[in-house]
Length: 477
Image 1 (spheres, rainbow, N blue to C red):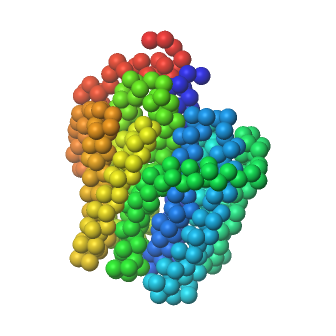
Image 2: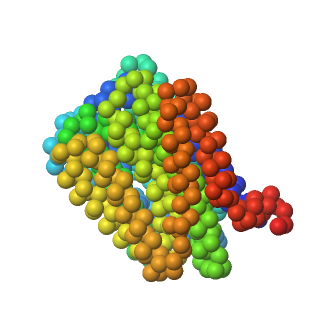
Image 3: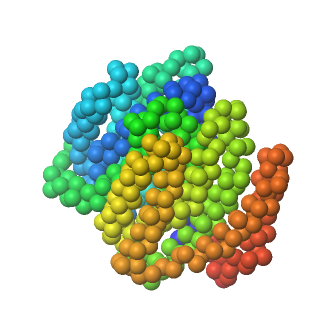
């Protein structure tokens, strides 16, 4: 199996799993929104978002560092993973204490505090099990990551829907997540010990200190990234109310899930490859980055255009006529998709060339910008202001990534790659706008056909695409 085939295989495996788990999660979120109503759904998203932000202190970038280091030195897998797991025990305790302190500081009700504790436990357990997933990713065995994701999501969705249908509320759903976290540890550790490493009680404090210090840029990047994606929900909960949080997340969650599926499965597959290219074939790294970004732009721009034109149809379909106030936020947030997809590749490039500090700085600046925008816009425009802040902050992040790539690696000349996909998407949106009231499946099919024809007429597909296809098929060009 050549390198291209391996990458596509890993993208396919990861993508299939993420699509399946995303569909399950999407169904669960839809029913959760319907059963809990706008206020209840807002409470769920506030608690989950805040604990997701805080749990970054359990990892501090260790999981991302492990992928890079193990990909380069697979013989040290057991040494790295076992020490990383033991390192996370005291970090988990400190994280839970921080959650308790913030629950007291915000003077939350007893029910809201319990929700924070339960979702905090789940996210802590998920982060610890993620140590083993880093091992699978470093070995480019994404089928194990896929198996883990499917089992975990199937458990949450099946049991979660069950308790909702039986009439139980949000508190019982939170307990489902806790049990899922316990299952996460059991499955991930079992797969690791059976296939890759041996358990060990040996602790190397020198290595653990190294993991903390070297992982800190990754950790701060993750912290800033969670601020970037979740702070709008937290600030809406603090500055407005649960209803605003519920409406905003009704618009945000489907689009964020879609972008994260694509970005996650691609970055997971290309990160180890980029890390090896940097050491072994640096000359190919820019071309690899450029073509990866172009394909993500080809995928992202039409989705954004379609969501912009058909926003009311999608929201009506998702929530059975409810959450109509989410339509304008959905339209604004649709612009976020292509920027997020391409930013994922540029951010991964910085990490792969040992410039994670630049990545951390970029995300930190963008997160601070996002916080300031949210604090300015939310009091006046509520969830509409939060949506605008998200899109503008993502655009700033992309610009910063390009700046630091140029500084550390050289100009990768990405922007010109997006002109034709953007033009084809705009043409598609104009042509489907008069058709938006007919059957939704027919509109989507027509949009896809129009977009493909537009790309062909604009001569977007090149000789390098044919060469890549031949390489994928195992044929010489």
